[in-house]
Amino acid sequence: MNMNMKKLIYLLILIAVIVSACSEHINMETESGPQMTGIFGIVTAEYKHHTVKITKTMPFYSTDSAECISGASVFVYDDTDTMMYVETEKGLYESETAFAGRHGVTYHLDVTTYGASEDETQHFTAECLMMPNIDKIDSIRIGKYKLGELEFKHRLGVYPYFQSLPDKNIYYMGRLMKNDTLISDTITECVVASMEGFSGMYFNGPEMAALSGEIAAYSLDQRLQDEELHDGDKITLLVGTITKKYANYISDISSSNGSNPMMGMPSNVSTNIHPSDKAVGFFTAYSEVSFTDIYHEEEEEE
Image: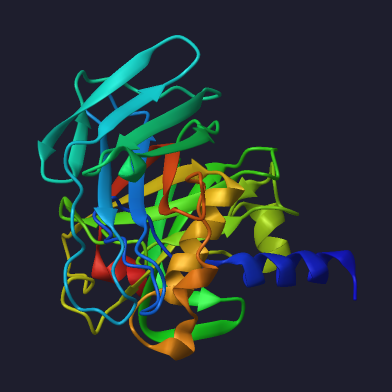
């Protein structure tokens, strides 16, 4: 097997339809397992009030909503500043002041939850580096969805064009908006891919296309109402850069999502919340760039 074929196979294996959003419920314990604390927080490069959600975990087969945890002390800090978070609604904590995350900075999460007694007080920590991101998306093309020579009926692909970064440890995350509504609003509705073997190439440029064909950053199922495209629809692609640990977490959530035990049990879901024997969830930091285009049916047919 030549090197080009190895690169193609490696890239196709690593591309998975998976997503990130803070609206995802933390619901990852087996029915017989002990109840744990679920923590999920994101720092982005957007100047805004960032949030951390804290809940109690629920049995894997439960259909009830997770119980939110109130009265916690929540801080996020970097090498220069400490941001205090205040509870804006039960279990949801928001930074007291707006701020924007910065590339190359490691953000630390510090959470203390309080129980009826001192023994029930728990302390949790996490950290995440905000990776550098691409400068911009130059353009996108919307057309029939293909993976190599395999064409998928009823699906359209969103194909971006941009200069990728040389760091092979960076993972790319794609999210999509249709007419200003986020389609990929849960962890199981996005695309995360490694560019190892292709790092530093122009994404979907001649060199990459010669090795693998064009690669879609997102696919849209035309049988679903929220994904079906009509002439004149506004499509916005967001590309973020995330760490390998967060990419693994998204993959674990995707394979453990739902109540079907054949999809994998939640004990396999990774976390960067410590102590890991008392908590689940993830604290992450990332930035996104975007490109907006108008969909035209006649262009798809070309």
